[in-house]
Image 1 (cartoon, rainbow, N blue to C red):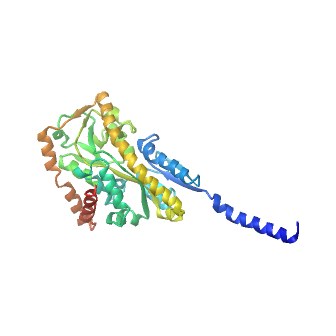
Image 2: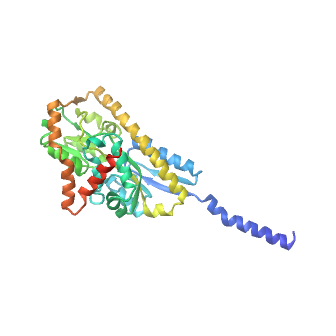
Amino acid sequence: MKLGQASLAGAALAAILAIAPAAVAQITIKIADSLPVGHYVSQYFTKPWMEAVTKQTNGKVTFEYYPAEQLGKAKDMLALTQSGVADIAYVVPSFVPEKMPMSPVAELPLAEAIGCKGAEAYTRLVNRDSQLRKLDFDANRVRPLLVQSLPPYQIFTARKISSLKELEGMKIRVTGSAKAAVMQRVGAVPVQIPTPEVREALSRGTVDGMMFVYTSLFPYDLHPLVKSATTEVNFGGWISSYVISDRKWKSLPADVQGAMTTLADKYNREGCEKVMADDLRDRERLVQGGVSLLRLSDAEKADFAERTRTVAEQWAADLDKRGRPGSAVLKEYRDELAKN
């Protein structure tokens, strides 16, 4: 080979080597949650989303998944993301109320938020320049991806009850200020306990019952401890999301960011619809297992509605008193709900 040809060949090889790392660069993302292995959230949201992101990016993005509190407790998930121990983590705002005080707006017992409507409104709110977004996400240097909402919470008790009046004085496990306010209105004593710790609390008598949804009883093996359950009552909801740290997000190429957000929208919608359908199925599973359903009479429904009529305003006013824009965020959320 002549000198000139050798120089050209060497230059070509150098150019190929220079661009090769970028062409085959791999991105590994660590994702953590507190959910039991096989939980419906991981089956409907997390795993399909991860697989779809990997496929859409042609294998450029892969995930290391750490379920079941392998990297930390449920209440520590936000901190794990902020510190970089995890890039993405499953965060329940009600478990970190001092850090994310505004998100429980989506857990208020609002009739217009039942089903997937509440999740859709909340998702739109946290993906635009809203007060909620600024205070609960931007201030914590994270951004939401996968958002989960659940059917209206019911009350499950370790002893059989035949009316809501029997809840008076009972210690009921709740999550968040919104559902705590509802329990206080019916005379119960709200006790804040993270989900993975509920079974032990119920079995030991630390609580007499809990706010839950039918579908969540089975993954946490709570159904053998339950004797009674309410039905068709709106005690409030649940909101949670997998969040990614701003630092990690900004390091990702635009095409990866696009794939993540587009696919998150898809699985947020599809996952919510599946969860709503499963809740009805699992109510029947519970009944077949011997649990007694408490159906409220028309008079009891009217009494409950009157007792809880101003829970949303109370929640907002309590935040306003603490220097937080509770009323403003409640208005934001209701305005989004009105668009559904």
